[in-house]
Image: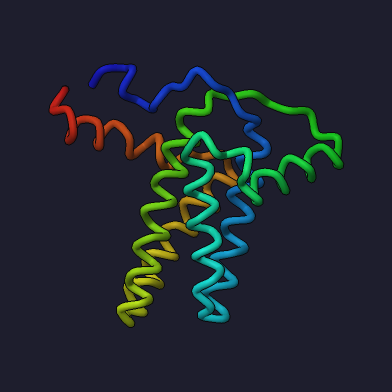
Length: 148
């Protein structure tokens, strides 16, 4: 596999600490859904993932909140490449869209499994800084582009 296929690269950078706090907010929202079965937690998260995965990330309420909290706590920024986090937000958007669809189709077991998967991904990012999207990307790249 080519080294550039390890994870997507962007010309932009983001604050890793903000990205990790974003993930923790995602876990909290997913818990909100699990305990209340209120789909609006997931709809909000899905919309926020959509914003963060596009050029409209500056309008993400979770992102803005995380930045403000980090600023208030005077946490020193740690710049990283934005590409992997944009890719992760796209995966988050797809998973939350599937949760919404399965919930609307009364496939509650499927929606809870998808929430659990996304919750684990988000927890790993938020608590440990482990990006599951970076582990998935090479396989997706190989599948889409057929390159070794």
